[in-house]
Amino acid sequence: MTNPLFDLSGKTALVTGSSRGLGRAMAEGLAVAGARILINGTDPLRVAETVSQFQAAGHAAEPAAFDVTDEAQIVRAFDTFDAAGIAVDILVNNAGIQFRKPMVELATADWQRVIDTNLTSAFMIGREAARRMIARGHGKVINIGSLTSELARATVAPYTVAKGGIKMLTRAMAAEWAEAGIQANAIGPGYMITDMNQALIDNPSFDAWVRGRTPARRWGKPDELIGTAVFLASPASNYVNGQIIYVDGGMSSVL
Image (cartoon, rainbow, N blue to C red; front, top):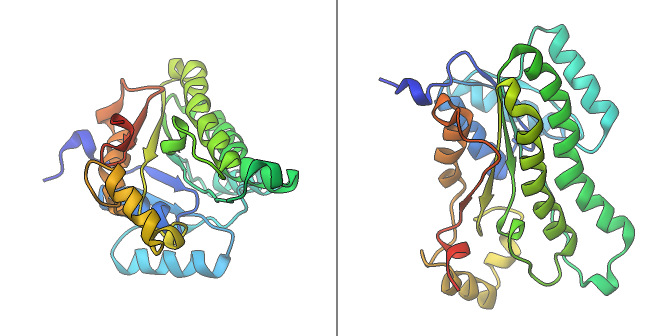
């Protein structure tokens, strides 16, 4: 029997970037907890395939293909939700990209692309979701940060700045929306086994650094974010607001 504190039955969750990677893992976890999932990505075919896989597993899922950096597409998506009677109760701002280059060699366009995808998108989608959550008097916003929300690493300046911004955006959301019954929190994953990190995983020296630097002595698995995501999406976190929870095997806690 599901603990009612963690039961998401009757709730609808929009998870950006959920056709693969960390977003898909969290979406699956929210679905198992009872939520209907709006699967997002920029590739309609990949989104449709993911929706079919969720439905085949017995989960309620629908497509929501749009570009998280395109304000017009975001507004249109939420207008479509409204017209279909779909209320987004839970928003997970997960979509993100990485770009590695020393700052002195970094083109402004590449800087802006990372900021737009990893930070500005969370503001724009969060704003559209919150406008509707405020009217209903409840809602959950979960932003996906990173270890770089706290700590910098060479060659990933725009990613570091964006994820640091996610931490403060989360606090700004809590400051403005908590009174309306909305909880805005963030998850800071450590080094996780994902497609985006595959080149690092395959690099023996970097792999050794991650294992040596992390008290758990291993990379994290995408499904290890599920518990935190379900907690922050559920009634169990109704008095938790403006926080970032690091799921990093202890890396951010040690020198």
